[in-house]
Image 1 (cartoon, helix red, strand yellow):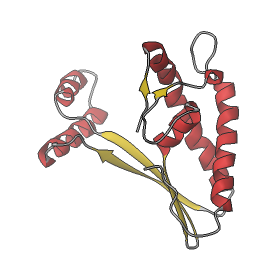
Image 2 (cartoon, rainbow, N blue to C red):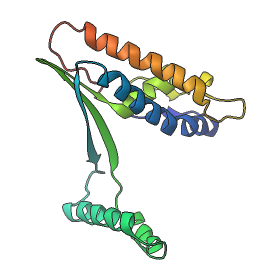
Image 3 (tube, helix red, strand yellow):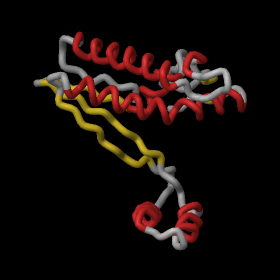
Image 4 (cartoon, rainbow, N blue to C red):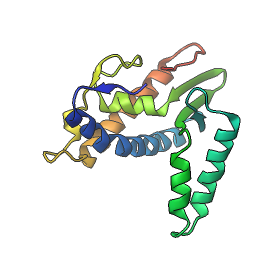
Length: 172
């Protein structure tokens, strides 16, 4: 669950680093896991707002596909129709398997952990982005983000490897 933010400035800081952190997290996980003996895959699910009908879900998916293939002239009408429909939240889950051991992680929750030092799965705190991840201008500091992401992924894999019994690790 994403944290709430006490100020617009805190939200802007999160906007500056969240997408870059997701990209770096995925890439670093891929690099580390390809060199390991863990089988891994990322699953995507769409989490729909309560009360969204099957027809609305299908229409949204159809429009998304049409938008992907649309010409520049066709796109605005499709975007307008999409805006009128309930929008799902994508959930990306990393599945790790090694023999009888299974672990799963919500990748966006890992991003929140990476970016917000005091982050809790309950979301009941005011989100504050790690200032180390920002330049003085409030932009993402890609070099520092890369260093922190590598350390984060190494720690995560060390925890997974240290787990002696089969279990599911999840913040959900």
